[in-house]
Image 1 (cartoon, rainbow, N blue to C red):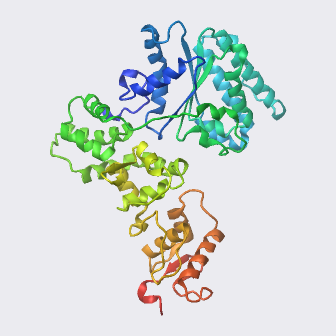
Image 2: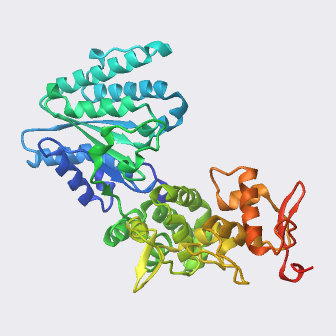
Image 3: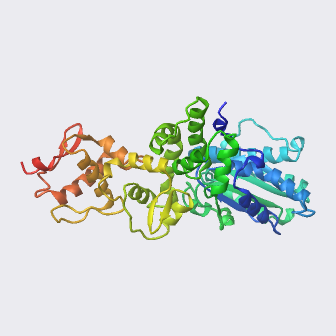
Length: 457
């Protein structure tokens, strides 16, 4: 059996590579008086959930060695990710969320029998009352836990942002409630710092999000830990050359390292010990790595407004001039790195993926504005992207949906919005925009940019 194919969240802290510093930092905040809340921020499938699972046993070890003193911690885990789907039915989602919190905490305290609650249907008129009752029940459970501190581990906190504002207010009130003497703290995970979730939900944000002003960023593994993962999981079957190759192809991201190392392991297990090239390994691992990379790519819009454009520019060999901290943000997530004075994509799998995603702008810097060859005014960013796509397919009809999927990928604009962009492009490239001859519409199909030799005809 290929040991690299077991990619479930890690429960035993001894199997969590290179995260000792993060675990110590979180426990240090929880040991403060009063305990401090903590947000763990990182890409999907980079070990965030495993870090939450590792906290209780790690805390137990620290108690045994005197790290927490006379006070101890009790942990309750809730995955808030599914609640993002309740945006249109937020009150019902809030009810389910508080039920899950109450159940998890009651289990942690072995007190299920002390907190009975109905699982049956609740009318719209009584939903808020039921949520109040659940919140008060959680407070009673916290009181029962004295003198221990209750730590609620909330995975994928973005789901809470989609719930009504009273959800955040109630969570904040547990931290501030004098009746339970400041014995509640939250450790949450998210793709972006929680303060960026302000205003992203359907409702006004609450002061709950202000509890996470100093996020703990889950960077890629330190190189020694990444190499140790390859060696220990690979049971000595992978060579030092394999290690170096795996790091170049997958960076120091645990999920991608497992995918790449699984490919190398399979070859050795089949008796094929010929050296594998970087290009061949990228090709073999790309299909399985694609879902991970697609999630990261689509999520870059939430990370930083320019992140996709900048990463695309780097993948095509450009050095974009950008304002702000977008390059540092990409570096912190292991998606870009500095090589001397130049920036580049962080690892080969991502490089290949981004080039494929943005092949239609291979001749253009995605972070620059395009200028018409005849000295006309510069295109705006969206105009430039649409023009670059049409130019890459010059002489062929490009369907409206194909254009929209290539440029926007998600949250596609309407046909009329695309038409307005086409009209603005015509104003900049056509002698007579009302009688276009270079960028024409093909009735019922889409648009076509005529090749150079046909533009004057």
